[in-house]
Image 1 (spheres, rainbow, N blue to C red):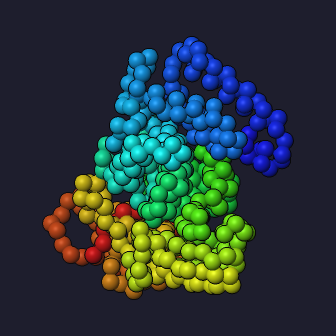
Image 2 (image 1 turned 180 degrees about the vertical axis):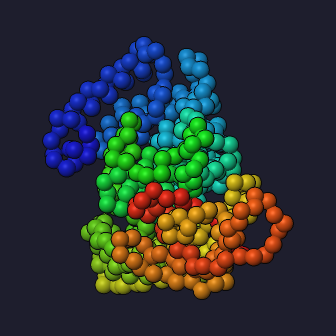
Image 3 (image 1 turned 90 degrees about the vertical axis):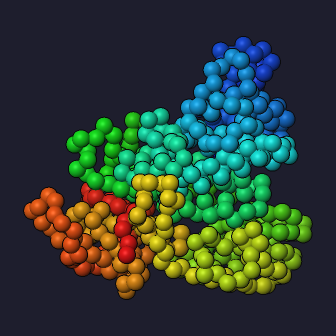
Length: 459
């Protein structure tokens, strides 16, 4: 309703929403006649806060606060992990239950904490954000590994071939990180949003924009479909029985601009990089920042500024360990005046990433990352039995821009054991050398059905 009103100026849909909100307020807050106290699929909280931000009606803020205060904190409902009602929300320290519902709720909590200056709610948001990104997030930014209930699993349970990682869950985590970066200055929120954008979110959409993944595995072994009770599909489709992800992908693509900058008076924080022009208010007057960049092909970003003097902070991504300048909370600082230009160069080296030792599905294996993009191998390029491939860390590496893929492809030396008719044999060092082709993870499954692997052996 808000988007439609902004785009068209027509208030027919908005008026319908306002009538419904009045009814919900009456039934839940005034009469308390509803059969339950809090919604099972938490989205109304952040919707109400967006409505409050748009119209400034205190009733909408009060209703959102009511639902957040009452979750896990009333005698009318059973305490449930699946809908995050197991504890009062200011006491939580772990992400639990349905991952999409959870992150929508956590987004609303962060929004309310900022509005109310609620330190306890902010602390809960920080605890649960730490739990997600340090213990429950795939390297692609995907969350919600357990397909039973589409939910968060236990700490460090990050499977690959049978992970769930719903596209909507990645989107909801990006929304949570976006709300957190509006509340406090820390580059880690932009890092998480970027990881999601270039990997676990956009993998949900085919390169031609016509097909979608509901779930986003980090490994595909098509033979397992014959014996497994659950395996993610290995090719995108146009529609699902529950098609929440396709429109959510389109919504997120349209929302990218609002994640790029945050402001605090005459201080501007650049959180994401893309060729763009942004209008904002500095010193009570309109100012313009433009970005010129080939990101993520390379990490060179040029900012041009026109307007009153201001301070620009530019996020230095966590993967950019080669950056040599000073940083504050993960940001480089620049003082800009009208007509100034500044260029930030973020070296994009190829890195081999290891997982925490407790993430046992990835023990002894590594992921390849260049810039924000995580890479994978497909059977169509590298032959059968991807899990037996060992990448050679010190081999020559080529980064090549190829038609049809909107990020570079990597070629590097690799080896595998020779094929044999023996099921078991004494260990030997015989290997077959070849050149492996790695593509950005988001681009997998865009040619034909093929096995795929992210985490691989390296020597």
